Each structure stands twice: as C-alpha cells, then as structure tokens.
Image (cartoon, helix red, strand yellow):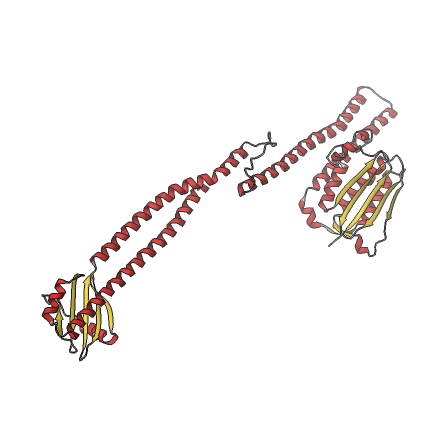
Length: 454
C-alpha cells in the first residue's frame, strides 16, 4: 500500500473514531435527557393527581377524571391511585386496565418512588403521604414525541456520519496528495540522477521543513558520492597507468634482449634494469594493498595501546637502512612526565608504515641533509613534527598532496608513485589524528597530532 493510501486510510479512521465518539455521546446524552425529562413529567402528573384527589375536598374522583381527560398532555396517559389496602381508588381511564403486580406496589411503599417500564410505556410509581393515609400513585404513558425526536436525531447522526466519511475520504486523498507532492518531486529528481550526472542536486524548497532537510541531506550524500566516484575513477586511471609503465618497460627490455645474442654483461645490465622495475612494481602493489586495507573499518576494533616513540624509532631504523646517506634524529621537545604520556590507541604496523613514508619522503627530497623527528606534548595531544631541508612543495599544490598518485611538479624527477601521503592520511584518519604541512623552498615541516589514549 502506498503512503498516500495509508495516510488517507489513517485520516479516515481517525475521523471515524472522533465522529463516532462525538455522535454516540450526543445520542446517548440526548436519550438520557429525554428519559429524565419524561419521568419528571410523569412525576408531576402523579403528584398533582394525588394532591387533587386527597387534599382538595371540593374535587372527587368523577370531577378529577373529567379534568384529567380534558387536560391530558401525555400520549395514552394513565394514572392509578391505590389506598393503604392496595385497593384501586382512582383510574383516569374509563376502561379499567390490568392491575399492577403486588411486588411493584410493595417496592413503591418501601422505596418511596420507583421507575419502571411496561413494554414501550414508561411508568413512575410514587408513595404519597396524605393527611390520614398513605397512597400509591402510578403514572404511565408513551413518550411518542420524545421517541420520534430521538429516532430523528439518530437518523440525522447516521446521515451526517456517512457524509463526513465520504467528505473525509475525498479530502484525505487530496490532502495526502498535496502533502506528498514535495516527496514525489524529490523522487522524480532523484530518479534522474545516475553516474553520468552526479553533479546534479535536488531542489531543497524552503529548506526548513522535513522535505527540505531530506533533500539537503540527500544532496550532502550526493556530494560525498560524487567525490568518492571521482576519486575512484582517478584512482583506477592512475593505478592502471602506474602499473602499465613498469610492465611496458619490462616487456620492452625483454623483447629487445631476445632479438639478438648478447654478452653476459649486457644480459646482467638488462636483468638489473628489469629487477628495478619489478621492485617498483612490488612497491606500488604493496602501497595499493595497504591503501585498500586502511578502508577496512574492522581494523579499528583491533586497536591496542602502543607507545608512539617506540613505533617512531622502529620506523627510523628501517628508513636508515634504505637512506644511509641521510642523518635522521629523533628527539623530545620536552621530556614526558610519565611513560603513559607516550601511549595511544592504534595499530602499530599501520602507524609504522605511516612514519616510514613520512621519513622516507623527507630523506628523498632533502639531498642528504639531516632530518629531525621531534616529539612534543600538549594537554590532550602528542605531537610529532618531521622537519627537512629539502626542495619543499609549491604553495598552489598544497591542497592536492594527499590525493592518490598526485606528485608535485618539482618532484617528478624523483622516484615514487604518489601513494605515500595518501596512505599516511588514511592511516592517521583511522587513528583520529590530524596532519598539517608547512612548506617553503627551504624545507618542509609536517606536524601530526595524536589524541592521548583514554
């Protein structure tokens, strides 16, 4: 069932419940009021008849009967009076009716007054205490006009109830359609968006109601999808290019070597060149694999408490083995008060990989100048600063340095594939750490801030 139909049905059910409650309340209150009003009239008739018969000496039974017959105000009215012996002493009708059961008379004498029904006729029994005797007076009649009014009220309420349901059905359908019109517009706009036009956005309307907020949220999601889609396309394109380059070089060298017989020295030279390409290809594959691994959310659940200085020193040792001409110094800006100040939650292997990339880049672009890695502290963070005296990064290219496969224009002649900083950024994001880069033509300083282990 569609939302429009659900809203219409719910609207009808709510209206039916409200109307039915109101109409039933009106009907039963009107019915009770009709009964009370009619019994009051029967009470007045019984009391007046008893007073005239018992207390007024000038009026006897025959005269009272004449008065009753000429002043009858109730439909098929009947008034009967009994003396203390339960003998009928007055009946306003010419034809005697059936006698009332003895239990009714006894109940009237016991309770003083009662109400009861005889078929469709309503009766009121009253104990009247005269000057010399106690009399039972019973007045009964059929409330023709009152019943007609109640029946007419019931018919009117039923007609109004059915009419209100029909009006509510039509109105609810129109109202639901009007209320869902913005959602339908959003659906129509969203259905037109695919991978070829991720730049399109949904109209947010006034931007303040729920539909506007939904459209705004969807637009934010589209922006993230567009960015992710662009990064993916760029990643695949660059990865394909980077993988094809060493493979093409290797293929070309092998094909050339097979064209003619060559000396051992020439074959060794070719094999060394192919080996360099294989190493480059292996490094690229490892970088891609590690970059993909950092997207695995489950790694975060395996974080352990580690000492950041030990991880940094391990990375220093590994980079020294590769870059033997560079001096890499690791030092504290301020000595820690407690070894716990050096602890963070994280993955030791991933952080070691991040530090290796940062230190390796510093060495690579510093032309054998010394590198510093400084450990410092703030109230809530551990700070690692890596400082080199290298070629720096052009200011207009700073915003792109963390993109996969991006290489600055002044770094094209250096070995590498542009995955290092992208990998570092992803690893640091996983550890809720921030990285900032300050660079000039005289060198670069990279600052990494880790939150303390909680």
